[in-house]
Length: 349
Image 1 (spheres, rainbow, N blue to C red):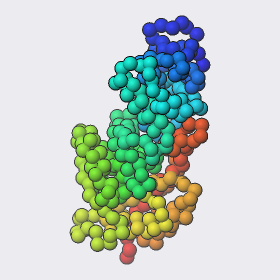
Image 2 (image 1 turned 135 degrees about the vertical axis):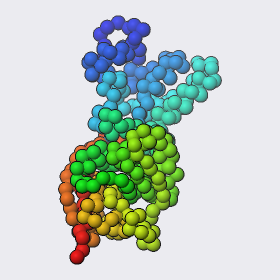
Image 3 (image 1 turned 45 degrees about the vertical axis):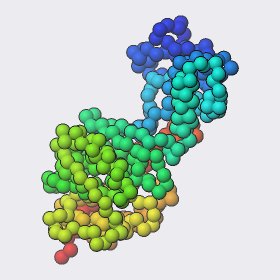
């Protein structure tokens, strides 16, 4: 798509195409400019350093926002041919650019753009912003993701559950004074609960997840305090049956868990941990949200069955749709359907 008005100080030009930069006009149109890789500065043209840096900035893959739509007015470049374009920049000597610092900046930016397109595992550490409500945005640090540390990434079900917490409050018949999160990961659900419910939350996970979790708690400390909440963290291994509250008053009336099932053993381990840490009161609540992944149908059913066997009663359940950052081939975010449910213990006579 090209813009019909002539080039002006508010317009950038890529290979003859005028990219509108006027935010007000772009906001009115709500239609992003779509460019092809051939519209970008080509190396045989010996573009200036500033031109290359501008286009590399345009090619930034922003941290996904778990939304079906991104920046509606930012000019977009079709992904077809972009990796090859970036590779050509990295492998070029850029001999026509005399300033060595500018050449280094261009190579670094092009390498970063390639990394962003190599899958989530290859992406560098990042800080992402999650809009939970109109007045609550939480910033979380995520290290480079590895298969062994899936808790270092914020998953769709955590985002959806965080946004659902306000509605969940109606199913909790008592004042929420203390909350336990199992498998807290990056901390989004626990931080959201502290802020939305204005309560104290103990966020727990495996020891290797804690350093990043604690970093995020510290990073959002002022936000939590100003919202009327508080947090703490500790390691909690669901398989460690010796790790249990010593007194009934140390147990929790509300436990939350999101995207916590990754193997056949997890449903039983999770329910056993919940049984050890939840108050034995019909007013206590367990709130769970899980993605409906095809390969985990048996594990989800196992969780439901195990909760019922351990004398938990389902109060309410439902499904909702979110978007993950594992992109499809056309570059759009993957749709994820999640199941949420709220349970309560049944008093045994």
